[in-house]
Image (cartoon, rainbow, N blue to C red; front, side):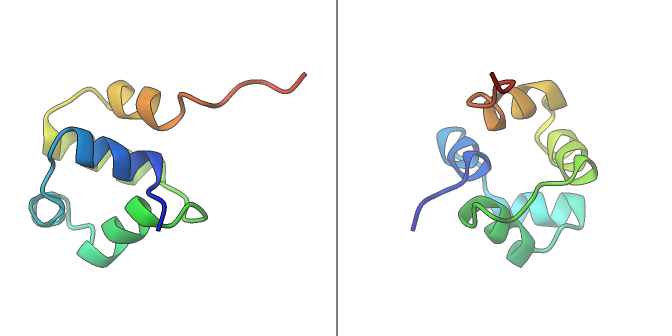
Amino acid sequence: MMMTRLGEYFEKKSINKAGVARKTGISKQRLSQLSLNKTTKLTVEELYLISLALDVNPHEILDFVCQDMALPG
C-alpha cells in the first residue's frame, strides 16, 4: 500500500502515531487513514493539532505534504 505524503513525513521523522493520537485527540484509526489512504483529506484543524503535538511549525508539514502541488497551466 502506498503512503500519503503525511505518512512519508511521519516515517521520515520517525514519529509515533500513537503518541500523536494521545496528544491531539485524533484517533489512531484516523491517523492511519491520513497516512495510508491517498483519498483521505487532511483538515487544517488536524494539521494544526499535529504540528502542536510535534512542536513544529505547521508550515513545515504543509510544505512537505503539498510539495508536488502547482497551479494549473
